Amino acid sequence: NAGVTQTPKFRVLKTGQSMTLLCAQDMNHEYMYWYRQDPGMGLRLIHYSVGEGTTAKGEVPDGYNVSRLKKQNFLLGLESAAPSQTSVYFCASSRPGQGTYEQYFGPGTRLTVT
Amino acid sequence: AQKITQTQPGMFVQEKEAVTLDCTYDTSDPSYGLFWYKQPSSGEMIFLIYQGSYDQQNATEGRYSLNFQKARKSANLVISASQLGDSAMYFCAMREFTGNQFYFGTGTSLTVIP
Image 1 (cartoon, each protein chain N blue to C red):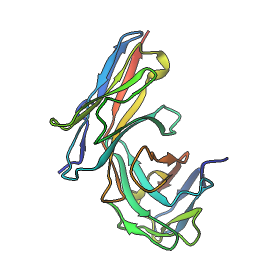
Image 2 (image 1 turned 180 degrees about the horizontal axis):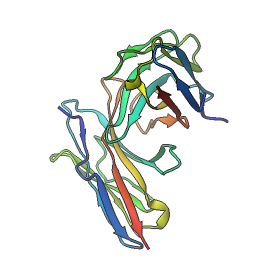
Image 3 (image 1 turned 45 degrees about the vertical axis):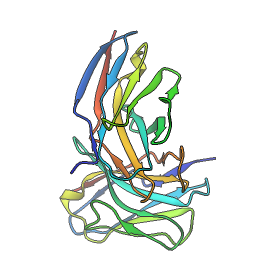
Image 4 (image 1 turned 180 degrees about the vertical axis):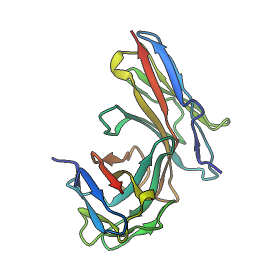
């Protein structure tokens, strides 16, 4: 199993450009998440999804959109990139319910907006 | 209010000694889970240990143990017999089971000194 994969691993954008980050998981997990990680800020939740066709806003959703058309994929879109969106983006997935259902993380995407 | 607070930005420990990384949390949900993750310099997030709010005993996983004090809302990670490979960022996280989000602290950078 590949677990959680993210595409691309690195990207440099100019201000105003758009892009889509792809997250894929092969563990049949219901829940998927997008985080951004900035120095000294830990991980902050951008958007999440509790199942195919559903999405919800997290702590820092502004400037991002998401889609979950297939259970295994969760896309994060930046319509008009800004320098403040320079960050490392992590995707994660987990099973629903209570218990030791930890999140499995992808390797991250390092995005720089100039 | 912060859901997860990690007050130690950086910690140093001598190799083979034990170290405690602090974590306090804030929730009114009676059902929740607490997690610790390790992030080495390579960037991936590695799940270490889990404690459920109703678990009577402190969780242990190899050299990792979680000192769970429910009344004080603390979930400190104890690493015994530190190794050089333990040098990394450590994140405490919480999941409230009435919701679907994970909340992360800002992390503690641990350096193991030979």
